[in-house]
Length: 475
Ligand SMILES: Cc1ncc(COP(=O)(O)O)c(C=O)c1O
Image 1: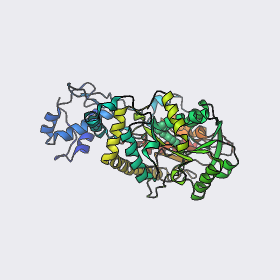
Image 2: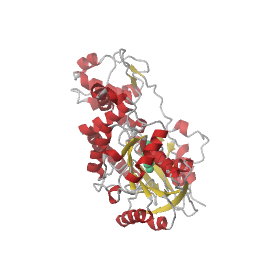
Image 3: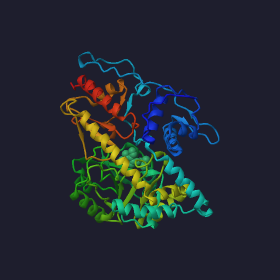
Image 4: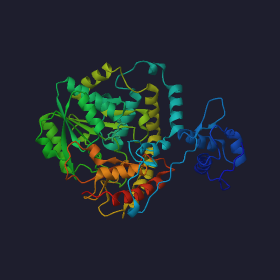
């Protein structure tokens, strides 16, 4: 096919070509089913390297816009489906909308825990998988060590020490299905060894509470304030373990204060309890003040767990835990009971390749810069929306807690945003204990929208929030 691409010659590079092709597909100029000319033809016509065309198409394939099939022509896959325009009426005329199926007509979706999936380094991953298949000894394809591939555990030990200050010997590292997989394994190990209750931060991610509860453990909420989890309340409890997010609390975004870090470690040592450190987004801090992991304070009591879900993609289901000696046998037993290492050996080797080659660092660095810009844009866009609206927490991660004016009704605001096609998570979803005096808030995952939409999505959120707040005062 012949199509007019919106390009300036000479073409700057992959980004520009990718952008032009994306525009052509999204606008319908290249409809679904269209065969894309071969990379050779496109490269010759546009005067760029074949590799540039290939990389641009790989990226569009990751975004679901084209389908690349071995031995067949690449085809356009995307069917343009324009989201309905958001009718942002002036506050005075804003009324209840009749459409309740908000999810189906979402214009901007800030819910869930995904990072920007279009930024997954697909070609690096593909070449790492290819290298793993070409160079790994055949024994790699056997059942293997339940803790995971030694090559990955060694790579992680070096990486975690270098970037997070974690004291990690490869023998004590287990590869898990993300942080949740690690938590599920540890919860079973705890329950199997006679533990009955685990403390969690309040507010915190409901999924983790449910994992603990389903493993037969009672969950005790411990309040979080501006300095993180309240260690005084923890000391007054009689739990066997605690799950904490010290570097960047979910969802408040605060960092555990230095005195509380020390108090937590000495409480764990005195009571001989297990601290489960959830470092899910520890690499994504934007203000040049990274907080080292807690784990080095007491490697015998603190189990460190991390994940590739934010740095790469949650669909990989790869995470890791550095397990205190005392818990290692119990943890490995649970993994065995569940069928062995939960992550494919090849994917493990691919991750080790990414880490050892420095590409993981490079990817994290570039994503850190991109998410930092998003957060800055969000803060700027929400500034002045209404008094009492402010982004809380340190500049880190993919989520921001946006506090709302104290006199507004959180549920009504979230519903009104939904009516305008803007999806966010109400803060109450994260709470265990709630009271009518709670400051209302919404949790915004600014990491999830795809790169080509994020600016529009943030602007849409800001105007929809202004509109929603205008009609959602608490009685
Ligand atoms: C607090 C917290 N921990 C961990 C994770 C990552 O979970 P997983 O590694 O299982 O994908 C998330 C993802 O949203 C999270 O919010």
